Image 1 (tube, rainbow over the protein chains, first blue to last red):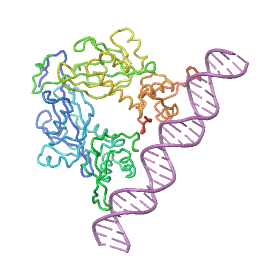
Image 2 (image 1 turned 60 degrees about the horizontal axis):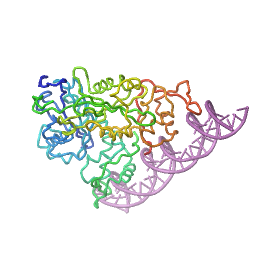
Image 3 (image 1 turned 90 degrees about the vertical axis):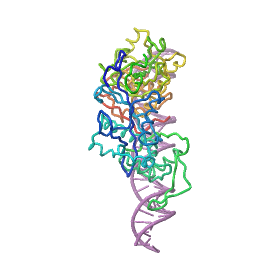
Length: 232
Length: 232
DNA sequence: TCCAATTAATGTCTCTTTGACACAATCATT
DNA sequence: AATGATTGTGTCAAAGAGACATTAATTGGA
C-alpha cells in the first residue's frame, strides 16, 4: 500500500470503519477484540472493523454491521456512530481516518460462536492496559466507554447488554457496572415505568430471594431519553 | 474522477469534510453556505468543506478549520464533530463519506469579510427549503440543528454565537432562537452562576431600559454540562 | 419635572424528579 | 418457625427548574 494509488489532486486518506462492541459479563464491562492476522500490528488485539466494500455496503453503518457479523455471527440490537478518529500518525501506512461505531449486545447472543474461535474474545476494559493493542484502539475504547457511561445516566441503552427477558436486578447490575457506582433500585423502577419502553412478562424467576418479575422491551419502541441525569 | 484511481483490493470511498457553521443574527438561526464553483452541483448552495490535504492537515479537525478559514477568514471558537454521512447515492461520483463538523461563531466576527464576497452567505435555516441545496446538505443541516437544540438545553454552548462581551438578554435571545421557544430569564441566570464559566465586566450597556450587566467567558474554562435539561 | 413604558435583576413559591431509607413481601435454607 | 436474602413499595427530603410578582434603573414623552 504505497502513496501512488492516488491520481487525484489530493492523496486520499486511508478510510476504515471500526466498532466498539460492549457487553456486561460477570459484573464487568467487556469489549470485543480481534487478534490481528495482517500487518500492521499483526498479532496485536484490535477492534473489529476494516475497509468499506463499496460494492456491498450501502452505508458505513452496513460496513460496521457486516464486520461485526463476520466476527460474532449476529448483528447487535443497538449500534450508533461514536466519532471519527484521524491523524497522520495513527496508522504507519499514512494519514488515516477510522469511523468508529459503538454497539451493545447480550453476551448470551454471541458466546456460543465466540467459544469456537481463538482470535475473537471478550476482553475486560480494565485489562486492556496490560495487553498489546493495535493503533490508537485503546484510546478509542476509552472514549466509547465515556460515551456509554454518559448515556447510561439519561437513557435505557444499557438494557441492550441483556437478553430478551431480564429482571430489574440484572439491569441494575449492568448499569452499575457501566457507570462504576451503585444506583437506587427505586430510581431505576421509576424510570422503567416512566419510559413505557418495557412490558412485564407473566412469569417470575428465582434470584436468591423473592421471585423477580421478568421484563422485555416492547416491540418497535424508541429509546427514551430522560431530561435529568442520575447523579454522579 | 473515475474508479481507476484505486489499486487496492477495495475501491476507496470519496472522503470529504464539511462544516455546519451556525450563528444567530437578527433573532434567527443562520448557517454559512457557499455557492459551489465546481461540479457536481455547480451553482447550488453547499456547506463549506472539501477534501483532506494530507500534506497540510494533521487531523480532519484541521481540515474543517482550514476550510472555514478560507471562507470566513477566521476560525470559530467552538467546533465539534457532528457525525459522518455516507451512501452510494449522495454523490454522483460514487460511494462517498462526509465527516461533518458543527461550529458556532459570533456574526460580528465574520460579517466584515462576508460582505466583500458574493459566494459566501449566512442563510436562514428556514429559507433553505426554497433554495437549491447541494448533495444531502439540507438533511445534514437539519441534523446539526437538532444537535444544537439539544445542546442548548443542557449546556452553555449558545454563548459562542455572541461576541466577547455580552448581556444576559442577548444570551437569552440566542437560546430562544435556537430552541424555538422562550425560557425563563431566572433559570438562565441561575445557570450562569452555577456554571462559574463567566465573569462580569465592570461596565454596563444600554438596552432600552435599565442598563445591562456585561459578561464574558472566563479564560480557559471548559463548557459545563448540566445534569438536567431545560424543559421542552 | 414627573410619569409611563421598558428592560434588568431579584425574591419566592410551586412542581417534578431523584436520593435516601424504612418497611413489607416472598422465596430458600436450616 | 426463624433467619437471611432479594424483590418491591411508601414516604420524606433535597435540588433545580418554572411561574410570576416585585424592585431597580433608565429613557422618552406629556
